[in-house]
Length: 469
Ligand SMILES: Cc1cc2nc3c(=O)[nH]c(=O)nc-3n(C[C@H](O)[C@H](O)[C@H](O)COP(=O)(O)O)c2cc1C
Image (cartoon, rainbow, N blue to C red):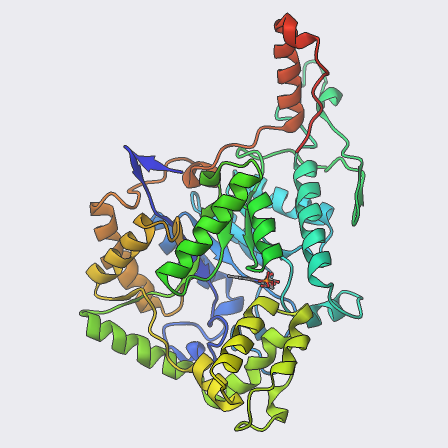
């Protein structure tokens, strides 16, 4: 964890979603946002530069590949994350570049090559947000009849990441002498073939790409089920999640850190960075009004009803009587969708005996978030959640540009004055800025350990170490 003096500091990400995220149907009407922002690379470059000037750790690009006519505008027409981030890599210098790629529909060789390339292009600023895809219909775009069940989804995810990490170590850091005098381009002893044969993937390797200055891209993970949490604890270095209340955030925080520790990992190297919305006003009342008006403007009952089925594999809830008890049996549709989210909704509906209309109203009506108020109030809440171990940082959903500007101009100076946020980047790589260790090449590490054991005659008796990670 990055510290200034002895002070633990807040990590900040900017989630860039062009004309709006989930349930934001009318954000695109804001005259300060280009109506094609989601496919306008200049818009992304501008936002990334604002975030970089404010010393944000990273920009974060979420993604999905299945839509219907009822999907919100950003989903209907948006750029592919790695292509987008490559453009940001050459137009920014310090900020981290984190993209979402699903393990359910991408082979690890392809993933390792693409993120490895982004990492090399950006000089060690890449991060991969590992997801398994909540939209069941995505399967239909990848030659499958149906999405994988949860155990398979998460089993594939773990193996996929482990293979990608293996491929990223294909070359040791000094594998390419590229010496024109001796005419030696490659030192073949520093090139390694993975030869992976697992449950889901057979990958020989090596990857045809050297490592970046941070060794390997930073691994993020998003997915809150038991299986998702175990995956995050196993491979995540940043966890993207929801944080509705401080108590819920604290419970998630300690759960993930405990799971990581139980797997033999340093819990400080698993950063919890939930996605949050921030509204800043002149006073607390002013900010609440901005929040209310913004949320009201973003949807409507009909749109919410149409979009509601997303968590349930886009099951169409318009076929049900709005005023009858909520059809709880629909949870079965979510088994290959966003089950954790759908199960919470159904649980609430059953417990409170809600009708479908009431469920739609409850889930779509304006809700008071925790990070809303004057700049001072927002800074206080950021500090409280951070100090009370609800999180290690915030992934801020960047919606309306005027609010992004107010956060940067009014809230950040307060956090800086309190020593809670950096005044300048600590390093040039994403790992350095997040306070995460450089990933040493496993073959280099194994060789060094072997050499050290030969230097120590007692250890030389023992079995030679094999690379294991
Ligand atoms: C905060 C958060 C953000 C997510 N972002 C994405 C995303 O951008 N793209 C995607 O395909 N899935 C995303 N997911 C979905 C996960 O990949 C997962 O498939 C889905 O949440 C269902 O798994 P779960 O029950 O373990 O949460 C996200 C999940 C969470 C909790």
